[in-house]
Image (cartoon, rainbow, N blue to C red):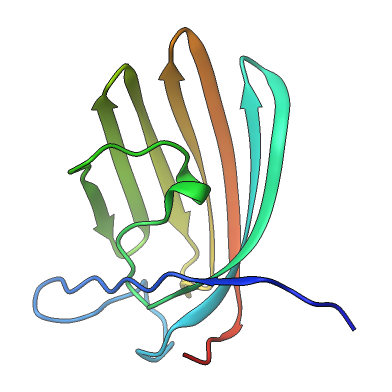
Length: 134
């Protein structure tokens, strides 16, 4: 039997008066996502991360441990099939984008951040494993 550490970060996107997710029948309860992150710094493989996070359907942002550095007041944009963001603050600049499958149960994308002459890239993949018990 394996043990997993679960971080519960719940966000809901209320857009146009309702919660949405790309053509999915997933209910309004939080879903447990397994998210894997592969990081490179200036092209050299760095730390990898696999984490379990509870997110509500239609979430409109991800925690920093997944996306990498974030800025105060940073804006994320969500459409039914995409989550994107840019950042620029304190010597950081960059952007990220995740694309969701048609049923909203998987996602993948990339983040690129430049900080102090270093380019940090992250490839993110995630899929819904289960519903969260909150």
